[in-house]
Structures are given as C-alpha cells and as structure tokens.
Length: 317
Image (cartoon, rainbow, N blue to C red):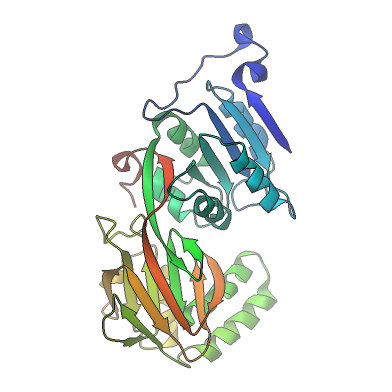
C-alpha cells in the first residue's frame, strides 16, 4: 500500500479542512516519505491509516509506504529516489538502521519512530515509546541532529554491539519472546555449552591486548556515561560465572551495570577484537557471527536525525 497525499487532497479542499498544525520552524519540511512495517513490534495493522490521519493535519505532502516481504529494498530505493526532505520510519530497529545507514550524513533527514521492541534509539531521540507523540515532536519541534554510531564488517550501528559468548543468549531470548519455547531451550543449551569456551581478546585505540568474556560497545546517543560524542563507550565484562555473564548481557543497555566491579569502561574510536573462532555478536539487536579478527570503528556523524533538541528529548535516557 502506497499513497501520496497532500493536506488539501486528503481533506477535500480548504473549506472542510480542520485547523492546520504548524511545522517545525528549525528546518524546511515540505514533503516526507514514511516507511511502515505493520508487522513490527508495536506498530499494528491500523498504523497506516492513523499515520495518514495525523499527517493530514500538517501543511505538507507525504507518501506512506507499507513495507512488504520481498519488496523491501525496492520500496526503500523508491522512497529515497523521490528526494523527500525527511524519511520517517515506523518499524523495528533493523529497518530504521538500514534507512539511517543509507541516508548517511548528507541526508535526507531520518526520523526513526518507536515501532520495534527495544526502541533504544527512538527513545533517546524523542524520550518516548509512543510513536504518535514522537511523530508530532519531529514534525513540530524537529531540528537536524547529527547521530554518531559505529561500523563493523561494513554494517553501521547506532545503538550498541555486544561481542562474546553472552551474545549467544540473544537468540534464546528472542525465541522466548515469540513463544518458541523449544527453540529457546535449544539456543539456551548451546549458549551454556559455549560460555567461557574461549575468552575474547581486544584492543582499544591501539592499546595492549586484553582478555574479556564480553565487550559491549555503546553509541554516544545511548550511553549514559558520555556527554560528548568522542567515541563508542567500550565496556569490558569479566563476570565470574555464566549466570553473572547472562545477567550483565541482558541488562547491559538499561541498568546501572557499569557500577559492577566486573565491568570497566572507556571511550574508544577503533576497537580490534580477536577470537579463537568466529565471534558471536548482537549488533543493534540482531544476532550475527563476526570473523575471528574484527575491527569496529567509531563514526562521529553517521546520519542526520529529525528530532527535538536534546534537552527536550533525551533527559530521561
């Protein structure tokens, strides 16, 4: 489903239109594209209609695209080809990351609305997991904001990457979330077997190699420990047993885990990691296997987001 609708067309003319809401005064927004995945986390089948109703309240032209299996790449390409002032994404973290990576620092502006399950980046940008509120904040208060991130094996990430055996628990957790309990048990057994089978070696900005059970790399937008985008927050975890490793990995992005004596952190711009075999990882929520020699680099300006100023959006990170 794809529709391009102007405000006057949607309302049948100026006479029948409701009160027009004002767009942000900080940047010119005349035309936008909105990519929606109705099957994603917190979106739902009514999201397209709800989006069109909200957008019709603003003086802009818009296109709402419902993403379809098998047509994702073509639909994203078409959205960029139409050269909108901004692309809004109401989908999971992976889709938002793909669009943001494609946009890059030269734009167009990207507004990743909270439509997934974790919603780390949208919450950091808009301070809410309510996509309708985030949509209005972007439209009415949005300012172009540079978002830093990292890249690993040609893939950009904007939230966090977990490297090491605790990342093996991610498939088990996802299987539990979707009710696939048999698979969750299988994944969990595999994670237990591989835990502590080989420690990760790493180097931060050319420093001496060190060993750790897990390495977590967090973007400045997400990190609660960094005030300036000077690098990725690199946190080395050295838990004493598998249960502690799982606890740290599960809570790494949301709690006061940095106070744990088994965790040490510092900013880094180039991170090298080595493993005896391929390195299990979770990159922006997606499990993957990295080469046994892997380099992660910091990107000071990965893409430009359309969001309220930090004081308005990020106080509760």
